[in-house]
Image 1 (cartoon, rainbow, N blue to C red):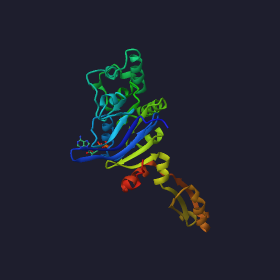
Image 2: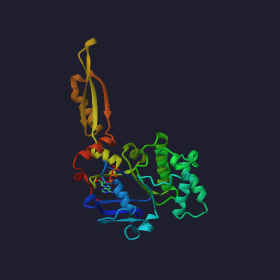
Image 3: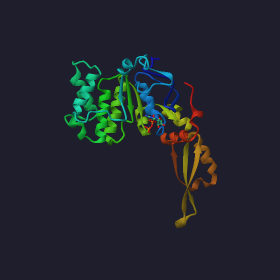
Image 4: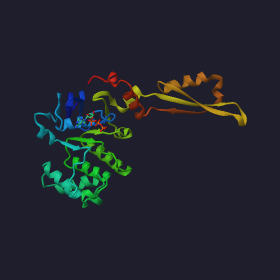
Length: 302
Ligand SMILES: Nc1ncnc2c1ncn2[C@@H]1O[C@H](COP(=O)(O)OP(=O)(O)OP(=O)(O)O)[C@@H](O)[C@H]1O
């Protein structure tokens, strides 16, 4: 197995007396996308801030490309592209100037600088507004500028904190395509979102935080299998002729294999079956279920 780009071990973090992360451990390897999920206040931003060296751990360690973030903050930070929730752009500069300046701050050499900026702008669909001052942009456009800044230097680790909040569907697709392309080139990506279909579209591994602790982790398919319910919805006809009515009966299945047994159970009523639909669990349902339950009970060991 390849060495992780990001290794978080037993991370606990606090704001004063308020503990925001409790003993969180995770790794992200080159080319891996980790979907960071959790309800508001679960600790997603705090985790990213700790990885970026903005929040100091109370306990545990964070290392990026083998460098301890607390002891070698600058060197580790240079390996990270971080698109934060709070937009840190210069409103009076143009889009191109913001991305270009950021590339320079990150130490990008002059050679290839202009092409890298062009590529980052194009990937975020910013060509048309490249010469516009950032203060004239919409909120969704500004968020794209932030993603372009985070990705322009092609860092080994990309932290994207809810990058698609307030963006239109075309931009959402562009962000997801770009993230997939960067991962295919070997970038390790930590992607926080409340839009669960994005996690599925990215084929991401998932860490679900709840109250600062790991409530669940795994591949999307594994979480669906472990926590999801497959439901057979049978539409059964009552009565005959014009007065006939139809009712829906829902049966929980442990898996599609149980369906023949359910149908056999209908026996004489089988000819009253007017329709049948199998509903696979969605990640939304699984997410709600884990968050409602005591998530810690489900946490895997690392
Ligand atoms: N600067 C701060 N000072 C004090 N408490 C904070 C600060 N930032 C976050 N917190 C608290 O830490 C906890 C975790 O917050 P965090 O922003 O990491 O959650 P989140 O999962 O990113 O939430 P959201 O989905 O709303 O962005 C919350 O209880 C929050 O109130």
